[in-house]
Image (spheres, rainbow, N blue to C red):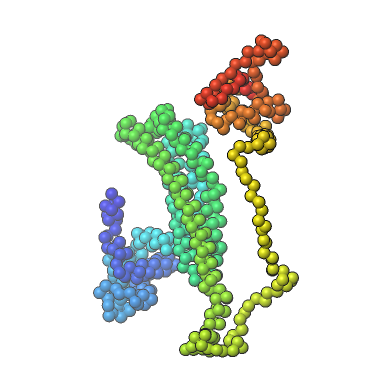
Length: 474
């Protein structure tokens, strides 16, 4: 377990300092000593190390250190140094000439480096790890040659890529908090154009968009599923694992291969939610940035200051009275900064006479339409059908039929719903057109009408009767 292995290397006090009330003092003292020892390329004399700790403790004079309340700054610094030595953040080095030096423990340097990365995050990075993993899974030749090595490399790349996506989302969240804390328009715009654009928008997020993950990931997922069902490659991966680890039986090796492929599939499934979270956070950042900008415009703009100065002057002139009771002359009040409005055509151009509608006779509506109204309705319906039943519509209907049933389609197969009836009419209407990509073949003898025996089909649940024909692809 990690905890057992960790506390074999460090003391419990090593981590307890980070949870103490004076943690900021211990961290800053260790950081200052580590930076100074790096510049010196060696250990620091003990007295000089105490002087450095004294400066840091003085900067944190408001922090109460355990068992150091009421002590002088130098004594408090000595106490901090002793606790860092006890917790093995620092290591004493006594030399033969009785000089005493202080070294920073390597484990403490690792912790300090991690704390610096947390406290001072750099620009978000999105490399090509995920793209490389998708391309490797699509490369069947590489999978066939080195299946186990390819799976291991892809799994590592995908895990690293998911961590990068989470780091990008965290960076966007951090910039959103900065945006909400902006107190001026200058700070608001700096967050958007100087910080977010350079650290996220033009770098990591732009690379994420260019990677086209939504089109690559499904193909990679299909390849993983195929790999899980490929007996030959599974056996080769099993043999590679048996060759690498002596004493491993075949069943355990195959189980580990299947487990690793499951981990790879699950890692691929985690990519899309992480990318969607970045898109959501980006949209939220843009929305909140615009809202903050508009708010700061209202509360910190020049117009607000002008209005504030006006009312401050009014309050000074008529203190203790209301505007209605003041009865001040207009020249006593500050000048109002109003825009001079001029109308080129004069105020008369704004006048529009009121329209008065005359009362007309109401024509009665009869229950039965006349013959003329029926004819007009038929003509309008025919014009509408001519406009809607185009050759493009006919070609589209025929192409869909060919895809479903082949190059020759019987008329009984064409009609499934009432909407298909208009498409069929368009096909018959434009069957002789040069732009039609189909032809209609019907069994009929037009030269001998007496011998013409046409066949019909009942379609749409028997509601329509259609002459039997065949729709053929040209």
